Image (cartoon, rainbow, N blue to C red; front, side, top):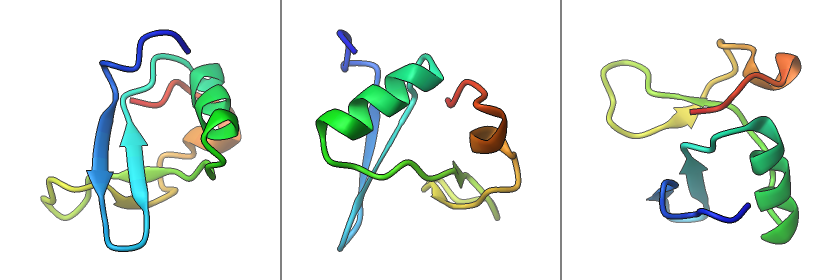
Amino acid sequence: MENTERLQKYQYENYTVVTNFETYQDVVDYANANNGEIIEVGFTDGSDNPMPNAAGNLLAEKKRLR
């Protein structure tokens, strides 16, 4: 992944969530390079912060994650 300027980072007490990847492969590459874990998140309940939520089925279908 060459352009990391587009990424959005959300800092929590014990972890960081990074969003706005252009492709699924970008997610995989970033996670591998940063010893990260890929999870699905959603902006639910009117929240401005992403929370773990697999309702979109994005990981299973390897859809573009934004």
